[in-house]
Length: 114
Length: 108
Image (cartoon, rainbow over all chains, first blue to last red):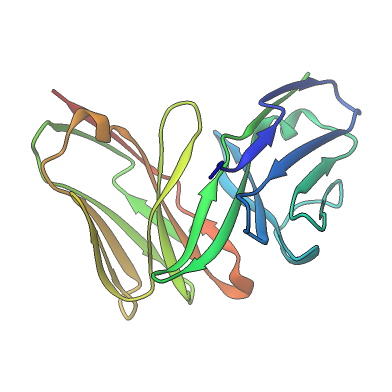
């Protein structure tokens, strides 16, 4: 079974631009969540989608948005990029198993804003 | 004060040593994850706990819900265990809140 796939792996943008990141979950997983990781703030929760509906949202400005498609693939969009948006963006898909929820992370998209 | 506190922040051990990483949290949770992150960013979920203790190979995780504390133990540590270990709690609305991570280095 293929793992969680995130594209692109690396991205360089300039301030003011917008960016779209993609996440393909493991086949059969309906929950996808997104996280931002920076050296200063560590890992922070962005949002979670389940069956095309946003189930939870973290404390990020409205410039950060996402969506999930009927095949469970998810996209995350950041508009009007700021230097502080430079980070590793991770997505994870999850499924409920015998021992509880199992999380599977992608390798992330490293975004640099110049 | 962060909602999730890990200690120590950095840990250096010799191969074969027994290692303990601690996680304390201040909010009500439904469960807690222990994650491992290797250089390059890849994160692996090691355990999800809501009570008691779980063991997988040389890794053991425990949680005490009343004391709001969890520990991750590594027995017979090996250089390949070198990584950042992150505690993440599932709080209100099923949102994950993360600790700052513990950088573990195991020397041969």
